[in-house]
Length: 220
Image (tube, rainbow, N blue to C red; front, side):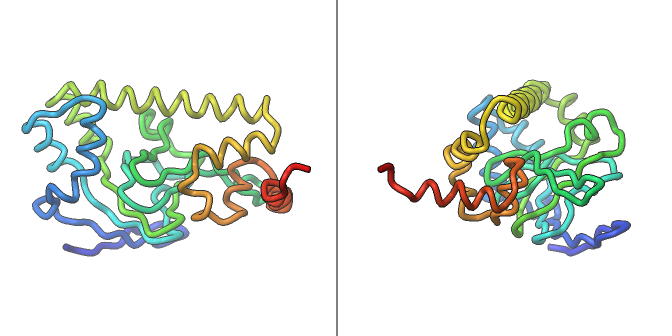
């Protein structure tokens, strides 16, 4: 196992990367299980996953992607939590997506168009990911076309999810958005700070506190 430093204009992100030959079946298993639910893989395809995905550890508060950089990786979260977000000119944080265990995170527009990102990704906890680069993803498409279909499904699912988020933001009340969050992100409710949940819902932490208190008051 070796350690290396990724230089960043503002933040120095320390990541842990394991050599390809150290990536064991056990370490790959969560990703292989995920793929298996979509399309079963043969041994050759599993070997491609083993050789082209890299395991990395991002420490809490360190960047996976910083605004102004090109997104070069698709990230499968093995443990921990990532967020995709934007800080506006007033310094307000707007969280677009969380990704915890068995979820994917990438800035898809930057990744596929190869342009600089207007968004950032960082780790809210110490987070282990299995990561594939843009060049290696193209390689795996060519060597095993099955992955072209798999990642098309992932991107389609991401689009549907973001579309639902947009519809919620324009048609649902803050309370409805909060209830949807605790129903669909129950694993994160007690792991995230109140300010982070509020930034995802598009409300202030104070208003979120009132919503939470309301949930514990029985109906009269």
